[in-house]
Every structure is written in C-alpha cells, then in structure tokens.
Length: 511
Image 1 (cartoon, rainbow, N blue to C red):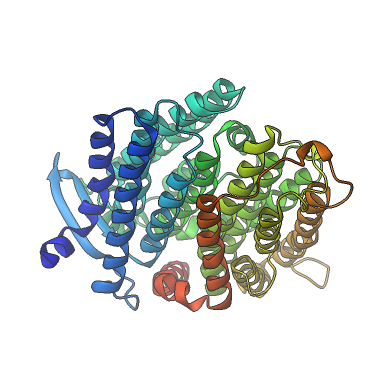
Image 2 (cartoon, one colour):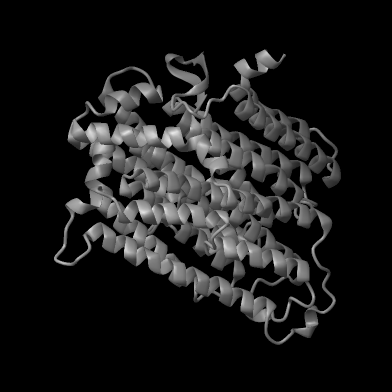
C-alpha cells in the first residue's frame, strides 16, 4: 500500500482535496459537520505531504522527483507531475496553512457551510496543482482554476464592498492569465517541439530568437507580478484583503501570492536566463520601488487589514530583489522569504480577524488600551509583528538578511557602475534597506495605537482569544520561531534546486 502511494503520491495529493470538495457538497448543511470533514481531509493532505518529504524525497537532488506522467490529449498535453525542492517547500506551506485556515473558519462559514468548505478544497486543488504541474498547459489551467473559488469566497462571505473587491480581483487576475496564455502559446509554437513539457520547453527556449525570448519573458513576468503583486499592478490586493473573510485573507497572503513568486523562479528564471540578466537591474529598481512605496503606504492607513495588505506588497518586493541579484544568497533568500511571509502574514491576518470579530471595526483609531482586555492577543500580536519587522531569531530575519547580502555583494550589479562609490544595483539595495526602519515604524505604531495608550472603555467586555484561535496562532508562530532559530530545517529542502537554477542561469550567460 505504501509503495502504491509513493508511486502515485502527487496525483493523490492533488485528488484528495477534489474528493473532499465533492463529499462536502453532499453533506448536511451544518457548519460543524462540514468543518470537521474538511479538517480531516486537510490533515490527510498534510500527512501525505510529510510522508512524501520523509520517505523517498532526496533533498540533495535538484532534479524532479516523484514524477508521474499520464496521457491526456495525446503526447502533446500530458498530466505530468513532479516536485523538486522549490515545489515541495511551497506544497508544504499550503499543507500547513490549510488546516489552520479551516479551524479559523468557524465564525465565518455558518452561512452556506457546504459551499464555503467545498470552495476551500477546490482552491487547494488549484494551488497545489500549480506547484506540482510540470506540463505548461496544465500549469495554466490550474492557475486559472484558482479564480473560481477565490471569487466566490470573497463575493459571498466578504465585507460590505465584497462585490467590488471580488470583481476587481477577477478582472486583474483574469487579464494577467490572458497574458500567460499568450506566452504559453507563443512559446509552444515558436519552439516547435510539439509538447508542453516544461523541462523540454526550458531546454529549447534558449534556442529562440532574442525577440521571442523577450516577448515570452514579459508576458509571463507581467502575469506573475500581478499575482505577487508588484507595482503598478498591486491595487487589487488591499481591496481583496479588506473585504475577504479572515481565513481567506490568510490563504490569500499566505500562499496565493507565492504563486507569483514561484512562477518567476520556475518559468522566468528557468526558461529565459539571458532576458533575466538583461532586465535584472530594472527588476531590482522595480523591487526597490515596491518595497519602499508599499511600506510608506502602510504609515498612512487607518484600516488594520490595509496595513497588513500593503506590508505584504512590500515584503514580496524582496522576492524580486533576490531574483534580480543573480546570487546564491539572493535566490535562497527569496524562496525563504516566500515561505516565512506565508506564516507571518497568515498569523497577522488571523489576529486582525479576532479583533474585528469582537469589535466589528478595523479602524485603528477606534482602539486603545486593548492589552488590558485581550492580553493573549497582545502577546501574540507582538510576536507576529516582531517577525514581520525581521527581528533576529525569527523567520522574517533570515529571508531578508540573505536577500540584502546577496544583492549587495552581487557581481552582476557591478557591471552597472555610477560615479558614486556604490554601483547602481547597490544603490537599489541601500534604498530598499530603508524598509527595515519603515516596517519597524508602522508595526510598532500599530501596536502602540491598538494596545497601548488610553483605554477605550467600550471594549471592556471583550473576551480574550478562544482555544481554537490560540491553536491556530500558536501553530503558525511556533514555526516562525523554529525556522528563525534553525533555518537549515527549511533551506535543506530547496537549496539544491535553488543552486541548480542559479548554475543554469550562469551557464547560459557564459555561453
């Protein structure tokens, strides 16, 4: 039985949430029943992922493992699945976030629970599929499938402006998907290999003309930075976060944004290394604008969700900076940043959600002195905030420090000198480093306004965190501490794949 599972491990991981969605659709329309079934399936997914990691997955290999390939439309389009270190780290993040999001859904899903949990499971199928698909056409289909459940989760269970936010999300991501589809077709027809196999296409992409490579790169890159999101395509995210229910915000910031970062690593870097090098300095400049611009925006927000949303935009800019550096530390730091931010942002959105559930307001100006009424919430908020501002010994510090080191010491940036002591790439890094101060400023100011200062006595009757909320937040923040103190426990999973990707880029640049 175990051998059969290991032979079909990835297809099993992909099918389980789909089966769960179908089963939940036929259950009685009671929240407790639907949530229990969804939670059991989510724990099964987590267990399956852990079995995959600890059974036959070799972290020292950079090649695809657990490969499965099934005919679909002849040999041109196949259901090809496989994982390497980059894939499995994102799959693990999704497997961790799903059960905690389901536990956090109890107060949200009392209305239409069958549909809610079915959509969560359909979303899981889509996201997991993006990370393990090795056929480009299948990758695109699973990427687009995510739009359906996410639209309904915001449009039905969201806030007062949910219709506007869900439609804005749909329009941005659908148009971005159109760019990707154009890139997929252009790459397929121009390569002439009669397959959508990503390994084959990556090998043959370098044989295309410079114009075709540049066009394909830009089509994919625009799609991915819309999802990441990055300036100037980031405006859908704050609205989506503000209106989305808490568990959906946790998944949106925790894992859905990482689809954009994963796509940049997997396709933009893996398929078009020469174009990446040509545009590397512009990507670094875009990253710097993203990091600082979004951090400044956090300082002028009064809605707690908008603060965390813009903070996510800022922190995803570090992923772009790491990629642009073309260094081992930068590549590794970008992947670590995606994983770490997934845990931290989910915890912060959960904390904001617990406050909103009790007070029905997210306006910072409505709070004050909450430490007296919700001490558990205060202590956990402090820990999550310290991780978000990259305090040493917490996971947020590891990713950012690696990216700063890799980008500042990048040999690639030295080919862009200035009349100053620093080259232009280093100037982008130094400019980005201002975010360390800005992030500390807006997070500490948020804590001061919400939990310190004069007490707002109208909240004196509030109850502190309940046990399910403590379980969710405790799980996320224990992992934040674990990966901050012992980052090797995560980096060993993806480091060989990250190094192989960088070697591929450098080899093609030399050639």
